[in-house]
Figure 1 (cartoon, rainbow, N blue to C red):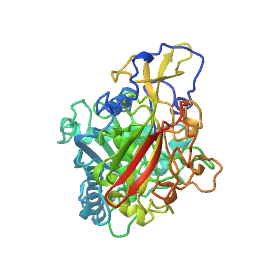
Figure 2: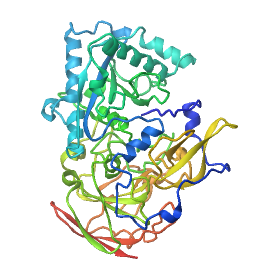
Figure 3: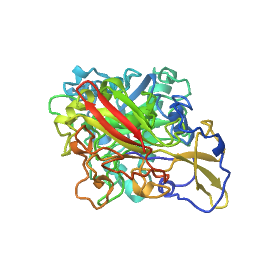
Figure 4: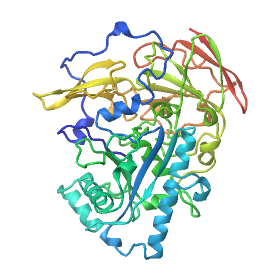
Length: 499
């Protein structure tokens, strides 16, 4: 779960329901300058995604190089007996350190936040940091929950007060210097994670006893822009013998700007990625879109007639983009294609179920095809209405410089009700080799992807025997047929034939 807050006076809920209206604004993109299917994939630079996120109020932890985190153990008044002088307190601090900064072996289960991201990024990201002293907050859990339910405080008002207390204790009155945790020298701590020392509750209507990430766009704190919130008990979700970092890995993805790929809609909501991703059901590695966003991979833009060999994505980061008039950035609409294998960071979750979930990752290799619609729109402020509006025009390659009274936002979401355009669009959806469309169907009884949804030499072939009339959200047709010529443990060969 995460909460988003833009630098405006509207409530979070109001932001999420902004839709296209008849107000017209200038389109800053000159269609005549749009390159025809650019072969460039970082036309805006490898930090373009994070820069665009930051400019709309979502300051992000650097995804390349050395990033540093401050971990804050929070103790409610209910548990004031927890301290460094007790066995319980010592174990909690040791386990938190292992969870965030330990080696794979240290966890005795899977990966820490640091070891996961070093592997997932192919060595591009190195996370280190400090587990601070316990921060003891004034009131009991029930007292804070009562304030939330009565409307006196919001959950982020309360967690913001904890951030202020932690910052004062660590940096103003303590020995830590914020600049030591500001690797990109932007004036803000790279990331802060608050870990509360009481069990979480999935049924807590106030969200106080759940997990989320918050971006402070109103600059309430001097040197903190982004923080996550989660229970220490998440560390024991998947194992009785080791340390489980799944949830904290997921939340760290948010601190770098990644969205959730599951749906927030209630009832029988769609599951566009079939639940099988770190930013979906907290399992497996990050997918190719996420890694492209974060600058960890350099996809190849496929020719409409061409043969390509992909090594397993886990080891190589190999990825192909198939698109019409690709604009050279991650903020476009395209298919991103990789060779999935149940190895490396995928191995554990492909063989065992995580926590209380019944889903497992794909346990057979195959070609994964994700339909990405990460196109941008410009939201400008209307002083009469006192709100930001999108004029319905998609924008290509805007500058990543901050603009006054406006921001650029991704128009599509995997949550249908969050889409500013057609609710049938999605940010990232699995193209199912089985030919099924159940993952995008609100009424489907099965919303978990299966091995049959990966393309193989024996499966249907995209654009030919399955989805022969595949259409992108922008109305254009798939430009080429895709055939899987061979699939071995070492590589996959893919042939494209122009339609």
